[in-house]
Image (cartoon, rainbow, N blue to C red; front, top):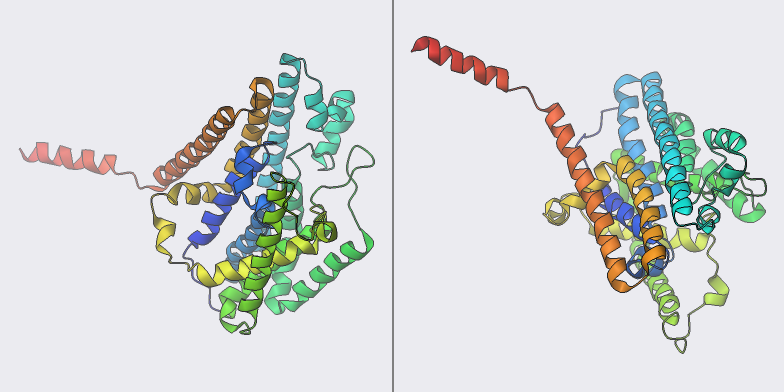
Length: 387
């Protein structure tokens, strides 16, 4: 089997960067900018984009490792990445606990510990820390990385099965997803009585779907072989999703405007990735794949470059965004939710994320660049000797 092209698909970086910015915005309660993110425009939000692209990218990167260097090396690479995510999650957990605890103590507001779901840690830290290390204790905002880590732990088996046939992966994943919808299967968390917010038994389907699509794109032409009916169907579903969701958002401003089908469709369960969320997202993927080409000019434009950089440094920017969104929430809670304050908090947070991504990108470029100073110095010495 020939190794696929290694050219980077900037669409993945761009949309992942957009998702990271949206996650930061959406995590600040009552944020005026959240009315312009996915969650108030369509039936899904940035979490679906993040998980799907993670699965797609994993298949591209580790699929090439599998082809080039075999199953053992590919498995080691996948689990190495899972370990990196685990370390990042633990590090983020410590910083998040410190941030929330310090803020609650400084402003004498114990409600912050309840709101951010760290009260259990303060009540019995010796238990909570162990539960955090086993990914069972998930404070507010710290619930998506554990699901991603679990997906990577099982991903070597997914890669090997896809090499035989993609249906060996897709069908079991779909059946498990349907079982969650029908039976309400969940994974218990800490404190007792809680479950994982991003139920890995359900969200695995979106991750696997992204991986399968990447595999098909590399080896079977991707969307080139889709039946013609798929495009108009996807367009209709997505347009209907936008129309319905926008009426819900507008109803919050003008009660006289009826929210279309809200009684029938709400709530669209995010924990278990409700089909009400999944189907419009799949339609969105089809439309993006067809209309946004990998060589689209806007992907290399000056305005898109900061978003692409954020997407390329996704782990660091995600962790930073979590801490910044909590800090922004605390600042607005203490100093007022006025529009000016909100815009300042959003601008500072987004700017810090973009500058951090630029700094990491610059460092990596410099680290990869060949050392030229010794050669220059040597030529200067040669010129002096000639003189």
